[in-house]
Length: 351
Picture (cartoon, helix red, strand yellow):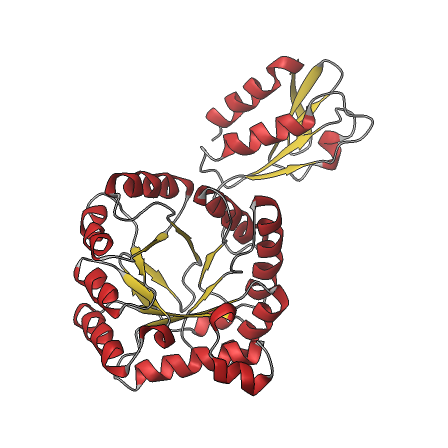
């Protein structure tokens, strides 16, 4: 059963999530949103990497007004991230935000929340109801004894109902935690209780190394259950790294198939070339190509082509020479120092 096939379809600018639509990749700018030029430049880099929805913080009125200028120069939807001040949410909506992310508990009184809903309703833009284990309501912590998956779910549903009772249901829900098992459990519970699309991610997961591991495990557990309509890999790093990681997660789970998948063997005593360096260069290279193929980077010319015979294209290093192979069949030999160049030529001429 795939829960995502039955979630509500939600339009975010020119993108659609939910109801079986492709799982979309998100990231968040780390520039000052008020710095329009820097923010646009970063979003362009993220667009080129494959980002499909971008979120920017809106802590000031100047940042809210910047959204209008930023929107003129980008082609993906922009989500305004709001903390505490409902006026910033209203201003962001008025300046063209395609979605707002709020924590209704932090927005304040019902009157303040109604102002946000009124602005969103007039433009029919979705509201993302964000719940985080680090800011779970005190009464729910007391009810369950500590922060729990059940508490996260109750918080999300309570906040969604608060908005529903005010007459609006154009919503996306997110339940995030740094605790991978808690996060996965919360998503499993809520998927049985709502048909709102779910934004999935492991929050504050860490650096490129640790964050990718935690996010890969957590997203894998959730997405493989058929849960989740849009994802963000949250890393303490250049946001482009988040996009790279998200694409690998979706491809590994066979949920998206765009781009080249790189497989490479571990090094061993038979390796005669700089396999680690070559694999990293190949991984960077393939981001420039749209092909839906598998590329193998192997360190052993003897066993490499056979071990990676399922790859569409591959390279293998030997003692001073390299092999180019396709589907396990060697198509040519080149000097070792020409191996990377030969790989690029193959990709440039791939049909």
